[in-house]
Amino acid sequence: MNSQELQAALGDLPLSGLRFFESLGSTNDEALKWASQAAGDFSLVIADEQTRGRGRLGRKWFTPPQTALAFSLILRPTVAENNYPARVTGLGSLALVDAVSKLGVRAQIKWPNDVLINGKKTAGILVESVWSGESLDACILGMGVNVLTSSVPPADQLSFPATSLENELGRPPDRLELLHDTLSSLLAWRSRLGSEEFIKSWAASLAFQGRQIQLIRENEPPLNGELLGLESDGSLRIMVNDNLLTVKIGEIHLRPSV
Ligand code: BTN
Image (cartoon, rainbow, N blue to C red; front, side, top):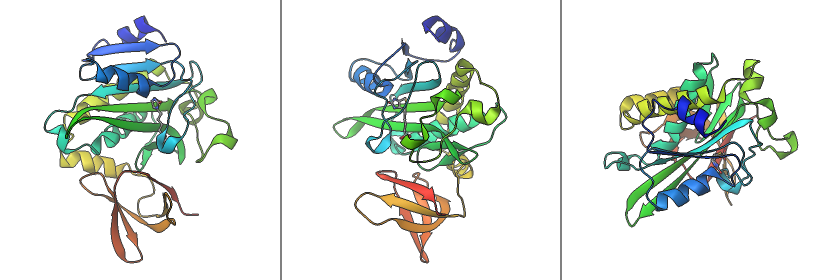
């Protein structure tokens, strides 16, 4: 992957800007910096290797050279999009589910931010917001996809079973094509961000629907319940001891109960 190949592969997409790095600490850090300067809406930062890739809950994200997709999009939310900040995580995961389905594989979303294939984590999403007073100035949508087998971290570093697209497809997919298809699907879903169809499709791709799950919360005991679906703001609906609970996207993660 290099700048020329990226420009050729993404030439039909309305990117405001593109910054490619052979090696970078974190594309989200670079995007946050660029967003605080003059980056336009739909600017892309992409790296062939990350040395300080970040995940949710302060975790590290592994991006060895030339094996994965690691990129961050800078979105400048419109006034209408400002009403749906929590849907941006769904936007990234839905786009990836679509792009992966073009490869002939069904992916599912482990709420809020993981994309699974055959029950194993294949991608993670990290959304970070830049506020200017009360208004949302930019959303940084960071996505990391395990493309080749060698992008999967060693088993002793995993908090959830992981895989790669190469493992699940039985062949290595083309990274540029996957990137193109993800961004193109993301644009299509973005134009429907406020729609009922958006939530329905997000919910339809949720992993563990109707199953018992465990919600892991910081400094609180885990909650066990049945995963029912999504609220319109992207919160998770679960049934805990006959009580309907909604859980907002935040410092929480879930796993299936064994
Ligand atoms: C998670 O699963 O906890 C989220 C992982 C997000 C990783 C991506 S890779 C591109 C972008 N840059 C980062 O430092 N993190 C995100």
